[in-house]
Image (tube, rainbow, N blue to C red; front, side):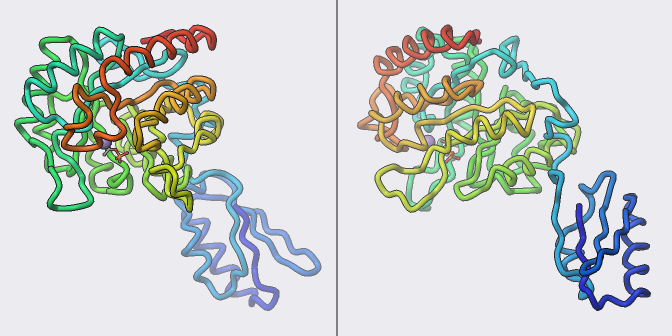
Length: 337
Ligand code: PEP
Ligand code: MN
């Protein structure tokens, strides 16, 4: 980290600031040029608050040269992380497909979709029991009954289950869930992230609607910092000025995250597209870009879905997609998990 001091900064104030910085456990290279005095902070600067330094009236500017995340950083963990879920591998050469309805609606609906996605080769079953809806009047999910149905679907199909948590107070109720999803709207729910850090459950962390990649990695850092290494990231589209699609799938997030971090990264083309016909072309890009898998919404009768029907594939469309993805994964020398 580089701290550029104002030219008129008094020597006494500069030494006092340097003492304060050193107390944070970093070394300082002091360099006085003809026009500028610069403090080069070396060591672990993750704990140094850029805003705190900027607030000092002798500081002209502060620039980070290394990333503020450490545990999520590939620089300190060059090997890809692989998360294992009930014997299935996610990341590091394996390609997974998580599929299922946006929300669990009934036993019949969930079991039909679960057996269909299993037959097509899905790795895990998804389904929302607690739904974060924009309108309080929209279907909010079956809640604990939805969790019970997911566990039943797992018992019948053997597929591990993925479902979204809304609050840290639900952790006990999610004890039997295989992968806990943190949705886009909760990506910066820091109390929830800290609580998940104290568990060892795999966490599927979705990128916030308007979050930068660095903010996503900082949220992952919260979970990792609590001692939970099982974090899977998910790009699901971000908000831009474009109106023709629900969200802009930021496919460039895949190579960027792969470069910056060792964590597995999935693509959710369903929430990006917002419409079913666009799911397949976007899903194909995930394989080519080097993603570790996909999350796809599938409904037995999309036109009657209580949530996200327009973007849901029916089982036949999902099966065709899986055939296509399998061929592409083989071409990219990825093993389907
Ligand atoms: C979902 O997966 O159903 C969901 C609500 O996704 P997101 O948080 O990405 O909007
Ligand atoms: Mn959805």
